[in-house]
Length: 263
Image (cartoon, rainbow, N blue to C red; front, side, top):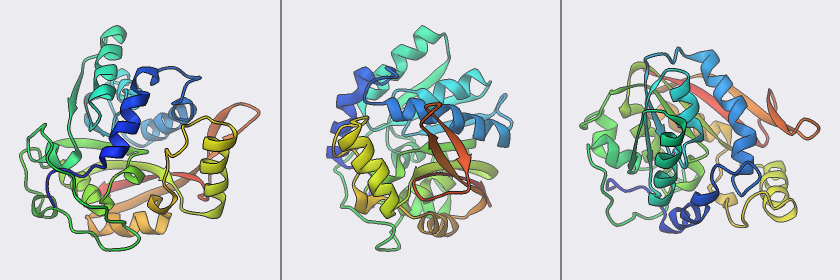
């Protein structure tokens, strides 16, 4: 496994969305609806003031800006050049100090912003994954640098989710916090998050999510354990159509968020 854990088609997809990232009624509308509950969930579970925080797969900066506004010292990384440019511009407009770089998590761990040729797709629910040796050992230029690492709505888009989990753990200091959110691989999730959001409501461009890449909560937690992450909480994110918002729920069948601690 190299420092690259990305799918060029996925990167191109999000490059195309970059200019409209901060439009609450645009293609990133679901992220705008999700962001308040995700941010509140994390703020309730970790002290952000002064914390070193890495937002992996930061996109245009929705989570990064909220974390910076709460007092965290934020680095944001994403494989999309266009998304990072959008994030930088918006942070300047917001008067927030956020360090944004174009990088995968693996490249960032090793101290590089560069990218090499992409590796093949390795599904977490189909194999154990083969993380880079540096990620497995916790080595790397930025190993253990962060108090908090967030990785929201990204893991379903990378070729090798197990590599990503090992890398997130390696970037986090012992005792630090890791937050992940994603979509379940379930019939209900297919009906709601893919057919509903992409084809019927057209909240997202068609093809945003590949059902086979989605992860069941048990698969995510099993992969996290392999990476040295201990589960602290697992909660569903339920959409409330009347208020056009999300709330925490015990229902994990569609969207869910997980809180881990680095052992």
